[in-house]
Image (cartoon, rainbow, N blue to C red):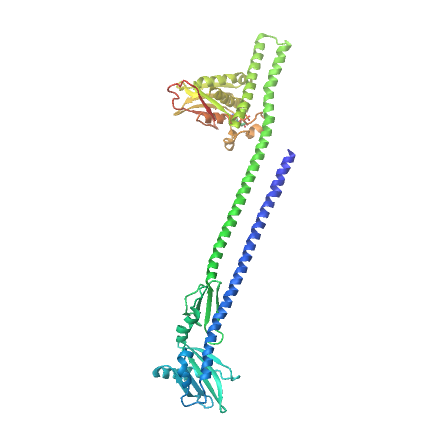
Length: 531
Ligand SMILES: Nc1ncnc2c1ncn2[C@@H]1O[C@H](COP(=O)(O)OP(=O)(O)O)[C@@H](O)[C@H]1O
Ligand SMILES: [Mg+2]
């Protein structure tokens, strides 16, 4: 016994927390692993996207610089007559985005444009030339090293301009050669050519310094969209790249996260529910096993009382020292009634065992409730006299004939009266009433005892359960009587309950449902029911 309790305690205080810790650790490790794996994947996607963005940005720079180099090789600054003619001849093919070429004399105080070749209509050309002189020329960075190709990307009145320029020296005089790129053309011709091609894995756009889209579709702002500025040419702008697979990945990651979260949550729920079920079952089992061991001791004790009475009076009679016949008769009556009680107690235990095994069989047959109740009361009368309690039987006259298991109802009533005698010994009377109610027959046993606290009223009908008062006063009992009463009542379609009686004491009620045929015609064959 002690061993078992110790084992149970080990289970509760060691294994349960250990189980919880194990589950937490397991979940934590799983979660961390998948998180790390995800991070690694993310990282590689980010790296791939970055490489792609670099490559895209470089592509434009390369294209523009190629054209710049073509201009540089085609335009000779020393040639004033027919300046840029060689370039104009091949411009459309070789340098499609260059629309004007300027040569500026840096030696003159005014920085005069001394050479100008253009591919645009004269009016536009004039406007662009003026714009160049006013807005672009002053911003050119004319520093060392002079041989270097430079770019200026400038926004004037919301319009982007790009020029490429070199410093040149012709016969000791400094000049600057400028190739003017037509930015709208870059956007409309070059970008599509560079970025819209076969690349189905990536989506690209170009945004200006104000993050307005210049080219391409809007891209999601997730962690898998990366931007890179054009390094040398359109350096105020930025190219953005999103891997299409990365977008899917983002969605997949989000989906998996929520799935994992749901999984973790539900496993937790399962663990908690499982643990609760196990703990509750263990507690119930423990309680039941305690109750059962109490029950064995209680039953043995309960049987002892009538047995010792039988023995005592038997020995008295045997000794032949009983003075008169009246006394002898009285002793014999006690012996008979106590052995009846003993029989009833044993029957109680046996019936209860049947109920427990699910083998309780009731034999229903038409019978008179009145007769059955009277018989049960009579069985208790001698004991009542000894306890100096008056048993009052009040039966109404309009009792219908009902289908019942006589023996079972008798046992139930004996149990109720026995309880009343046992637990209400200070009372004067125990009243047993039978009444015909609507749809059912009611058997009521009222006593004048201490009554039953409200919180105990349901519980005492459970097996092995005993009232607090009974335990405190050490009244013998096994806690199966009322459980049996309840079972019998339910088998008869009724119920068993207790309430407080007026002015004091308790009132135990057993009801029997009037079945079809009950109270009207008598069915010939007894009915059997296994409950
Ligand atoms: N008439 C009564 N007055 C007070 N308490 C009662 C009465 N009848 C039953 N009880 C309480 O209900 C408990 C359960 O009764 P029962 O199932 O017959 O078991 P037992 O009589 O063997 O203890 C009793 O232990 C007692 O505390
Ligand atoms: Mg009892």
